[in-house]
Length: 212
Picture 1 (cartoon, one colour):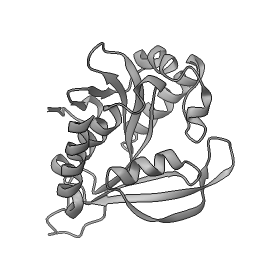
Picture 2 (picture 1 turned 45 degrees about the vertical axis):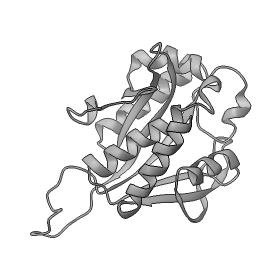
Picture 3 (picture 1 turned 90 degrees about the vertical axis):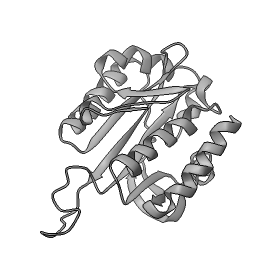
């Protein structure tokens, strides 16, 4: 089920998780979700503690207001516990010429899915698979995007395996692409899914979710 009353009110709901607009009220839940062994987040920018969670939310909301990001809190359906976060970001609106069918659209033409992390307890559950299914379905079926891409630290083998598992196509490695979680210039591995691949990716994700 998809509820879409604009970017700031977008809610994506499945059987296991609900992606709801990230707000300041999620700060305690985010801090609790990221508590524990920090090694899980070695390669990811994850807020640790409430002060970092406040800054994390404020940055996400500023990007949302600039219409470049749609940030979510990932909430477990069973007990409404915050178990992580994710977002659409780098929303691209291309300069289509007058008369082109896509000219004048408010919806983006392409985007990235990233800033995805989960609590220790939610790793290796259906949460990530369903969240990706919900987001990609909205991207390709509601927004009619042409491409969704993903970047991860080249050292993050767990994330790379997860992106390949859902059907992301390896595009290459971007050298010294972004600042890493350890404040070095990281090499990013780039994956993407394009509109023509979505039906097969959707089938793959649905199958994986059924097995979870």
